[in-house]
Every structure is written in C-alpha cells, then in structure tokens.
Amino acid sequence: MNKLKKTNVVSLCFIVLLAGVLFTTAVMAAEPVPGKKPSGLKVYVTGNAAWVTTSHEEGYVFMGGGAECDEAMAWMTAKTHNGDFVVIRVTGTDGYNDYVYSTIGGVDSVHTLVINKRSFADTTYVETIIKNAEALFIAGGDQTEYYNLWNGTKVESAIHYLVNTKKAAVGGTSAGMAILGDIDYIPASYGVLSSEALANPYHQYMNYLKDDFILGIPNTFGIIPDTHFSERDRLGRTITFMARMIKDGMRPVSQTKAIACDEGAAVCMNPNGQAKIFGWDGYNDYVFFISADTTPDRCLSGQSLHWTNAVTVYKVRGYPSGANTFNLSTWTGTGGTWENVNVNNGIIDNDIQEPD
Image (tube, rainbow, N blue to C red; front, side, top):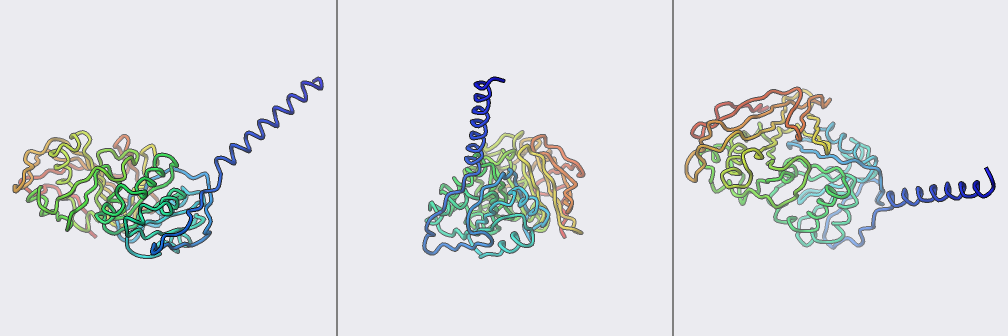
C-alpha cells in the first residue's frame, strides 16, 4: 500500500472512530437537571441523586393491587439496566424507595414524587424528573384524583414521552393500573359494585368511562383495566363497563376488551405484546383477558343488563416464575383456560373469579 493510500485509510478509520464516539456520547448524554424543587412538593430520593443514562428497555407492567409481586417488580427494574426508577403518587410518602432500591435492586436510584396539586403537575421540575426515568411506576391510590390532578398536564405529556419517544418501562398497581388502559373507569364519587352495575348499567356510580388520559400504551387499544378483581367481586362491573363501551359507541364489539387482575397478579408485557403472568407464591391469583362477542341484548338505564352471548375470557394463573403467558397482539396465551361468561337479566351465568 502506498503512503497516500495508507494515510487515507488511517484518516478514514479515525473519522469512523470519532463518529462512533460522538454517536455514543449523544446517545448516552447526561439527563437534564430538573432545577429548583417547587415549594411544598414532596420528593424522596434513595440512591444516587444524580441522573444516569442507560441502554434501558421498553416494557409495561399491570398489577392488580395489594402487596406488590416481587418478581414483576424485578422484571421492571431489569428493564432499566441500572437506571433511574421514578414513582409518582398523590398520597403517601417513600414506601417504595427502600423496597425497590434494596429489596428488589437493579436500579441506580428511586425518586418518589407526591404530585397532589395540578400546579405541581404542570411544573418543568416534575416533567423533567419523569422524563429522566428509565422506569416509571404509578402507585395505588384513587384514579379519580390522578385524572383530576394530572390529566392535560406536564405529568401526562411526560408519560407519553416515556412511552412514545424514550421507550422506557411504565407500570402501575391498583389505581395506577386503572389509568393505563385505552378506556379508564374514573368514578365521579364511589366505585360501582358489580350488583349495582348489573342491575342498572347506567347507575350513578357507573359514571364515568374516559378515553382521554394516558393513551398509546402498545397493544391496549380498546382495553379497559380492572383491579382487585376476584377479591372485590368485580366480574359483573367489568362486563358492564364493556357493555357500555359498545352501547355508547366508544368502541365496536371487535375492539372491546378488558384486562382484569387479582391482587398479587401482574402482567409484564414487552412492546410486541408478549407478556409473562406473575403472581404471589402459593396463592390462586389470576389475570383475566376478556373480549366482547356480540352487542348487548339490553343495556338501558334503569333496567338490568341482558347479554346472552357476552364475553370470552382467557383465565390464566400467575406464578413467581412467570411461566404462563399471554400475547395481547394475537390475543392468545399459554397455561390458561378459555371461558364463556353471559349475563341473564342481571345475573352472571359463570362466575370465574377466584377470591382468596
């Protein structure tokens, strides 16, 4: 090789190497500093207070409430690749910090924000912290408060950024799961009981079903979540939610679905829709994937729900191993059973729940 060619090759190699360094630096650039904390906002930090950037992975966790399923939380923290884990809530304190940082592990830090005012939810400080997360977890509480305080604010837009742009891990338990659907049940006052919903699909506590909050979670179009499912006898109300979605024109029959989780059960889904079903060791905790079959025969105010060919359910138990699975993209699973559930004049004909 002559001197000129050798020089050109060396120069090209240097340029490629430099470009690689610059690209890596751009990808792994430090996260922005949130700035000054708003007065009165409660923030709890465990671990490294600074912000790291990692080669994190996308993933979604839907947890039914009660004590957390450790294996599902470990699945979520692993997605951070030792990144920053952020918890948001309206009430409470730092209950997740030591649990996630020390008991579960796998994260650089845990930041908990108690966002109990719309003025806090619309600050750049809160927005930046959420955007800096490699994983965001929404604690249990009251989904109506979450909706009223966070809907249309920088909190919501930051969550959309994590889902659509950063591709981070996002999850929630109880009320935190209830706001991650395409359709969310946001009660105006008290949560409706199954007996009330079945007796009158337009019962005052059935209001409201919302489709304008935290949208775009992959593979969840047309899905309404429900939690504490078997423990609180929620089969009837979930089916009635679905009847209302169809009757009120929110979604067609073919796109009307639900995910319902028992306490201790969790769905951990990759962006392609493939999910592992986790559950507490030694408990009969299930996840129920429910799809509508037809238009309700009768879904009217003041009259009982009548739906003779109502829904098909894939009932699948959660185990610590996550051995059972479900694919939300293909609506198929392993390790579970298919069930049909109908409603005859307000009465469920097949109670598939497993109350502990």
